[in-house]
Image (cartoon, rainbow, N blue to C red; front, top):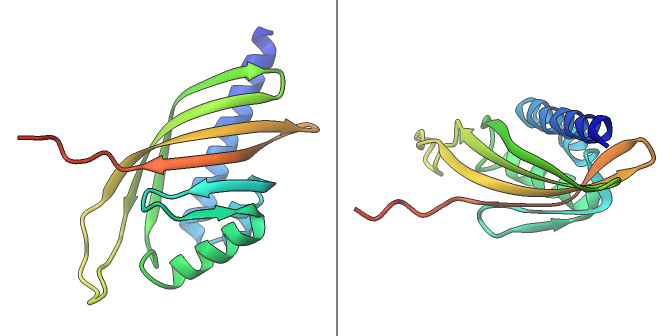
Amino acid sequence: MTDERESAEEAIRSRVKQYETAYNAGDVAGIAAIYAPDGTHTYALGITHRGRHQIAAGLKEQFAGPFAGSRMSITPLCIRQLSSDVAVEEASFLLSGLRNPSGAAMPAISGLCLGVYQKHGSQWFAEAIQCMVPPPQAR
């Protein structure tokens, strides 16, 4: 099982890197291909896209608007294989390059994501990703 766990972790880390690379290239089809056909993504703002088509369409809209030119950095923190074909990934992200409606630069946003991956055939696909931005610390 150790080799299987290492293989799953490597494959999921590779998927995360694919997401990051596709995001930074504005490649919505590349991002959507990482998800299972009926996979979901809930963004930190609470928007949920269901299925590859909706994920691609939603990202295309975001890249044409508030996320145009933004950059994503993702750091997997922990990947746990729950069974031979299901794993959970905890990650942090940093989103930079955002601009407000008037075009002024906005500060980078950091947050956390929880992803559930399932192996289909020989590949791991994101079944559900949920992200959040923790509230500022109380002073």
